[in-house]
Image 1 (cartoon, helix red, strand yellow):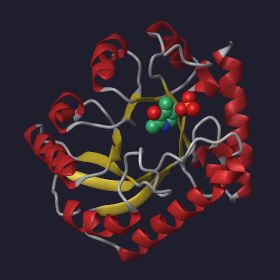
Image 2 (spheres, protein in one colour):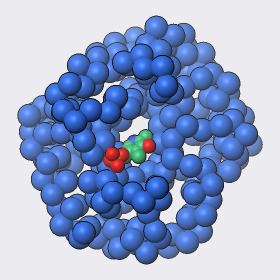
Image 3 (cartoon, protein in one colour):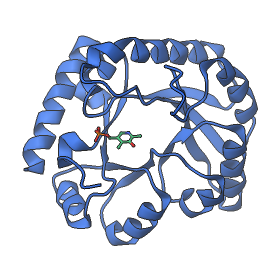
Image 4 (cartoon, helix red, strand yellow):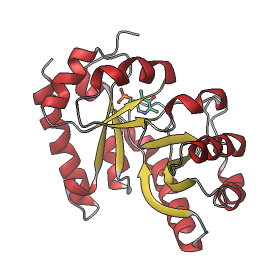
Length: 230
Ligand SMILES: *Cc1c(COP(=O)(O)O)cnc(C)c1O
């Protein structure tokens, strides 16, 4: 496995998919998903110019953060976040992708206020309605935006989804198209405290389709670092 080659391959595929939707590769942010990946490998990737990393567990961010302090990395929280752990990461991460309930948004607001920062968040939507997945149901999301939009130390910057796993990404194209529709709808509503800047969708198996359907952040782990041990 060679991260340099993988990074290049992923960027090529991003560029092609972006062209399909009339954009450039610079319009798409690549978040390299480093969960379970060793520090030395992450350092290698950082040396190769990787700038944004995604983690899904608070404890792992806490462990890795001090070890990577000298690298100019942007940290993204992409996993399910418990209220009682918000305080550990709210001032470390650039963007929390996985906010799906008002109590969590309220806690992020409270902790951000204590640290005198504005926390950027995405709202995680469960487009496909799979029972096991986290994420807000599309029907309840408008009410969420109105409430969370009032929190002064939280800035809603867009939407995120995890599509159902499939071997054929064409199968989940409608999921991405639907989230893009919801994204545009929310943008047009011009809700206070809400700016629809980022659409975070697409992982190793489906990111080209997600970009074609309008994603501007993709979260890629396996495609860069190989299969995870855990
Ligand atoms: C693990 C993970 C990814 C990356 O998955 P790959 O299939 O390895 O690219 C993306 N998003 C979330 C939320 C994840 O937990």
